[in-house]
Structure formats: C-alpha cells, structure tokens
Image (cartoon, rainbow, N blue to C red; front, side):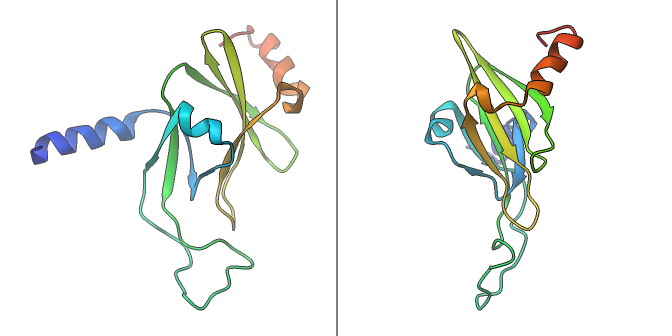
Length: 132
C-alpha cells in the first residue's frame, strides 16, 4: 500500500460515525461482532508506572465503536449517572445500548434490555415524530 492509499483509508475510517470516548471499553461481547473499535486519538492520561490508578484509570487512547451494519440513533441522556442511550436498528431487531462517558475512568458501552432504557427517552421519540 502506498502512503496516499493509507492516508485515504485512515481518513475514511475516521469519518465514519459511532460512539466515542476516552479508553472506550466494550462490556458486551456481542458488540465486538456488531462493530469495529478504532483508535481516534493519542494515548492520554496517567502514565506513572508507580501509580495504583485508584482514583482514575491509566492512560488510554480515544476510541470509537462503529457498527458494521444497521443505523445507530442517539436516544438521549438520562439522569441515572449521565448515561447516554442509543439504539442500533438492524433488519428484524433493535439493539439498545448504554454508554457511560469518560471522566476519571474510561468510557464504556454495553448492550441493555429495552426495559433498562428510561421511558422518558422513548416517549420523547413519539413527540419528535417517532422514528428518526
């Protein structure tokens, strides 16, 4: 591969939408099959080898999870720890996701049952013309 092709491939990967966060971890094994985890930024954070990382996570890069198929929609944030909720619409099924944004600890993403998505986020969809 030539430099120009490598640059084009990198730009193309970074332009794809998804869910992004510092040190993003996938808590549900199903997400590895449903999408791709790419690095979108350099490693940042505590790099002290003597640090126990008790009050924070160690250094990590920014990462983005990008679904391989379907359409990803943001449902909104809930007051339960500022989690963000998403739905991945696939042919024949919807997969609901909960995202914890980074703070002192790495971001994470997990698949959740529909019953764990706050009702006010789902009801809001009906007010904003339903399906987006």
